[in-house]
Image (cartoon, rainbow, N blue to C red; front, top):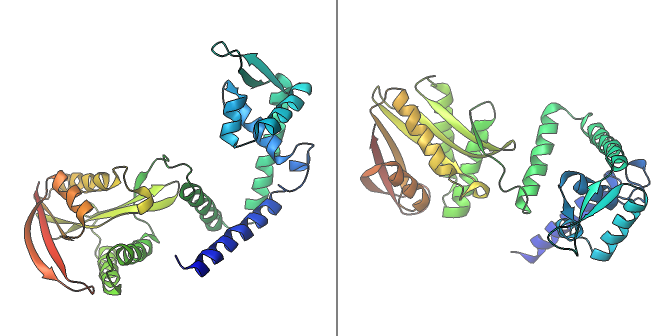
Length: 307
């Protein structure tokens, strides 16, 4: 990576960290206008939500120094907020839980936290709120959190075609070196799908994870008996969990239920992962030809599946 670009990215992340810690009051001694610091509130949250957690498990979960965490827990115990129950398996460990007073205090803090976030979100338009939450979820996943969030499939809606054209252009350029003429092809396919859409005979599937689009596939009509699978795409962040197989299987199922006798697709020999998905689903290659439409010499392939 270009050192100057890395420096700019580091500066951007540090700038955001300064903005957000100031915005949520993380720098002050009293978080949520209480006597507790942000770290103490987080410790109380984890004890409330992790059944029979030990101090060592809590420290590992929050990446806190053992001595610092011990002092926090001691203060909580002195205030009657946390109790310790000796572990039956390890005498050196004790399970932590909130007392009745601790649960009441946590409920008050939790309500205050939710109210503070609501105040941040309330001035934003609905689309802006969705965009903000989606961006936060994406940050969490990119930095190693919530990789197991479920992926759902839905039908297309306004805005999806622009995303499909954009992401095809970006990913195929980045991963295969295909130029903007491929993006133009995708734009024509997407526009044709909308302009000539035939409900019941055609469909698009949009894969989402926590509100973020991570994949797509289309089933379009070629003739009364033949349908075409088009625009299969899986975002890098959603690969390795079977989403490509799932999208292809949905397209096959729909084509069968719509009464088609054959499902065809067009791909290229360099798309090795996609070709494995098609082969596993039962497609067979029936034709290949040279193709240099997008700036590189390629071998285009036509595949078919008898339904």
